[in-house]
Image 1 (cartoon, rainbow, N blue to C red):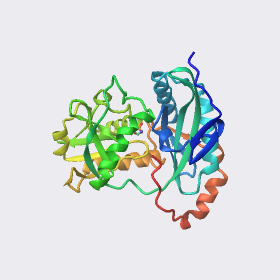
Image 2: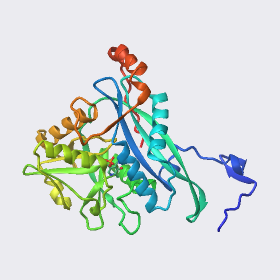
Image 3: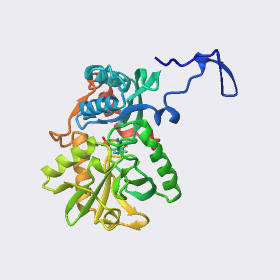
Image 4: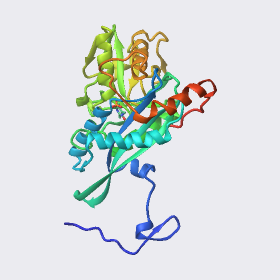
Length: 327
Ligand code: PMP
């Protein structure tokens, strides 16, 4: 087996350090966009004062699938995964503030795929409760990678390097997110969410085979649409078709379901009837205001007592600052 040498010194941060002291923080972008697989999971304060995490088992299952494809061992059972998240969130959660947790399997040992060892690292960030705000969306010159190179259907940090470039491009255009086209020039997804488009009363979204992540939120939104008798179709979408759509929104765990107010600088009609209704229904489901059987919630066990009492006591005075973007 190939072994990496471990010489005594490394040059880092302007000086020589011992090999074992030359470390990077788990939150730094070199690592988060590197060799790892991860899940972003979102927890919401519920209408009844509990704290519920959305679709946790599905996130765990996708993490395992992503790890399998990249030959990264995942030795955590679902119960261990859940209890690790609960442990951290329970410690950090604040009254009236939701949380987004990034659960990452980092490759911490091994070389060229031999002797690979992974560690589960969880970071969690506060999120304000404001509903998703409408966004300007652009179309990037950067493209989604092809399935035979960096497969987009799984969630690996490496896939987000192109998203980083697209966001840099978008910032100059006043766009908070950018559409990545696939190798055929059709719509794949955005840097951190899936695309929903409405034409003549039907919601369309590209399937994962067009270069999109196998999204969990998309499945939930599809189930909500079905219950609301809104036609929902997965099929390829041309760039030009998106540009002349009646309504556009993006959806994902962190993004939730913001409406798109302009696409490539062209304003979309203010009356986003179908997607606004879906957005409202999604938020009601994840917050437990109007639960839905497809939107499963895992409740923080120790939170329904002390923290929720604090929540009630402090509800009137909770003015939280705008959340920093964790991804
Ligand atoms: N595409 C990309 C590139 C994403 O980062 C995300 C967010 N995880 C999504 C789609 C939506 O996936 P999910 O609904 O599982 O969060």
